[in-house]
Length: 86
Image 1: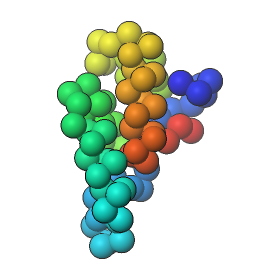
Image 2 (image 1 turned 30 degrees about the vertical axis):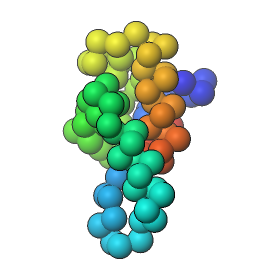
Image 3 (image 1 turned 135 degrees about the vertical axis):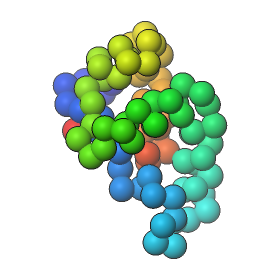
Image 4 (image 1 turned 60 degrees about the vertical axis):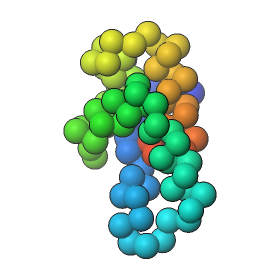
């Protein structure tokens, strides 16, 4: 998970065009990333713990997924601009 011991947090991007400034390509990337069950669960979990976020180990435990699987899904959400590492 990029070697970061910090927490994973939602980005300010998660508001989905609340202010009318989201580009279509950004919206499609975000919605595409969330169109997978584990990533959607992960995102919903982080919403519950916003704005502080959660450590990756705690996320894996809460979701019951192995670290490599979690790492893959975190990478996809990060690539879509939905989460960031701190």
